[in-house]
Length: 116
Image: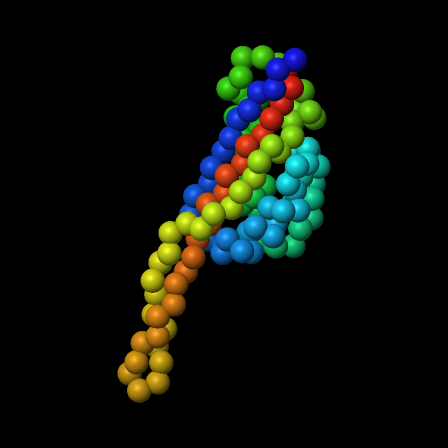
């Protein structure tokens, strides 16, 4: 039995990488079915984006490989969150000043593995 891999990448998630990585660490090295249940009950904004990335990677594995794979045997092989683009913004301050801040986005990479 060979192990087959597939991946999915979601770029530009409107959440900071530090906060998204906390959610990703909840489901690291778990089965996809268990991870989806955990993320559906996680009260964090980044949980929806991580769940969509995991479901997309699992669908890529089931649809792109020519062999039949049991959906319950799909595991998360690797999940990583990196910093995406930074949008520079300004907030008005007193005496006509403008103070800069950055809106940081995240990139989510998910790789799943399934047994043939």
